[in-house]
Image 1 (tube, one colour):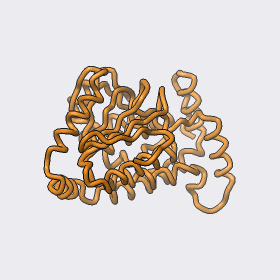
Image 2: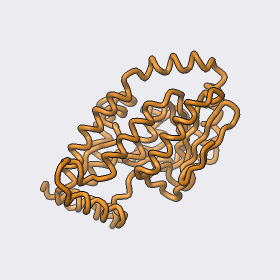
Image 3: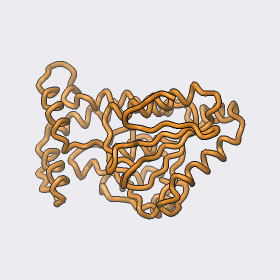
Length: 270
């Protein structure tokens, strides 16, 4: 196995494991998503691996992008001053979505062990897996509109397919946090266990998958997820264009500031 800086990668029998190691909130950036995609590529090349588990250290599974990070803000400010591609003011995010699509192109089943919050793009990462094992303490949220933003990470395609169009609209329009119990009820998660058992339950499910024929798994999954990566790529192109437009608004700046200050935002529609 290759050496990675922000994830731990192991092989347990026929199951490959990826553990995000940016606790406590596991914010992502292009480097982290690239590392996850690289690890999945590595699993695809390993004939002994038949399924994988994606888990995380800390209290959150993945809290999405850290819009309040000063280094990120400085980078994006530099990108915003460039001319050319209208998406330049999102800088790394445009490239991040390219890496995200690579995750959807992985060939083998993925089980996400969601032991805590999966927020924004972190929800998109959780939904990129085939299955999710979670717990009562977990929270699933597409909090983009609360930030004055547009959903990303392909969620406009993946979330409606998973929980239905109207439930996806409910999550998008309210930015509400869905509990682990609600997630299972809606089909957003597949299993509900105690928090300290989330990873072991995910490993058990992946092990059950890995008992099946590897060629049968590859063939069946290719059929079930046919065109998904291409549809996600098309979705992220549109999502990025909308995020680019909204990123320049006063409402987005207010949404980020209000989230940082843990207060209700004073949106003005401009």
